[in-house]
Image 1 (cartoon, rainbow, N blue to C red):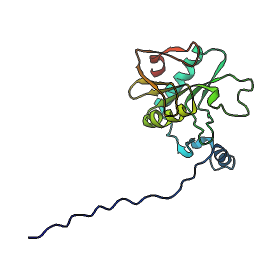
Image 2 (cartoon, rainbow, N blue to C red):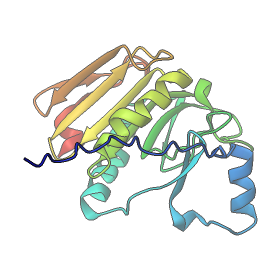
Image 3 (cartoon, rainbow, N blue to C red):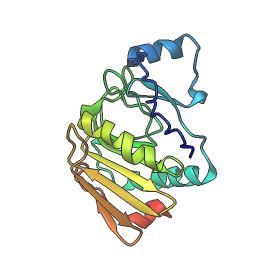
Image 4 (tube, helix red, strand yellow):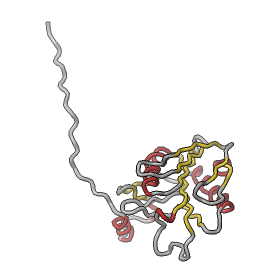
Length: 198
């Protein structure tokens, strides 16, 4: 009687190669030397150069809603910036769809806002939901950014993250179009979710 040989388990090879983590300074030097342009849509996230997905019509529609609706609700001592960098030393410089930052006399002419300047970040998520909810939420929480909203277009919901810590945000609330979101970090900001989601 013949017996089939039992396949011997061979563990996968261990990748022992090191990885280079780009700093914000490295990233800026690459841009200044002409390796990338603003049209390349590249973010520096945790030391890695990340290609942002193309902007589709649906995404543009929702970012325009933020531009048109949010400023009406904002106090005079803050600024709304759209698709502009936030510097998180030493290895990240994301470009969120929207950010509410503290007003500054020079308008951040000499340096991008840092974590201490940022009160609220908003991301419009269609194809990037998982990345925005998992990776970026941890990045922003660890940096101490007090509040983070993710507009989930496909599910017509708004994910509200508050209570930043080194391990992530402590509080996550999911709202739908029938709800009203009240910011905990931007004084007086209260808005019907349907005005953002459309």
